[in-house]
Length: 113
Figure 1 (cartoon, one colour):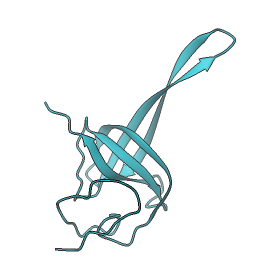
Figure 2 (figure 1 turned 90 degrees about the vertical axis):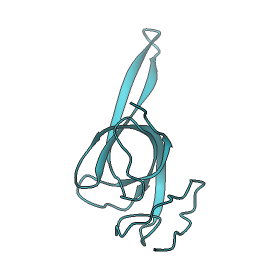
Figure 3 (figure 1 turned 60 degrees about the horizontal axis):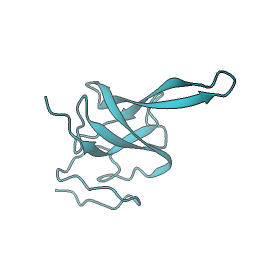
Figure 4 (figure 1 turned 180 degrees about the vertical axis):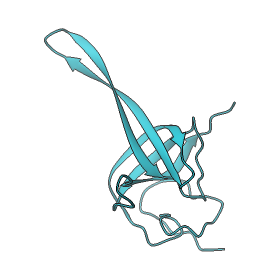
């Protein structure tokens, strides 16, 4: 079993260990930059998950709000293994692939079916 390291932010460390080279807890991947909380919309077989979150913006002229949805592709390490519907915490890292620049570091709420 690999030793779990601290990643520098207040998150719950995963109970499982993994051999993933892109895991911030069990590898040398460092985190930096922005962090978000969102919902897992889809999950891929190549350790990829799509996370989305909603925001509202005020249009001053019309005195109304618009709804904006943001989606990003993230790396889903095997030790965390977030499923569709879970609320997760996502943090920026170096580019892992062409489209993945974020990694899931914690599952906030599990979605019960």
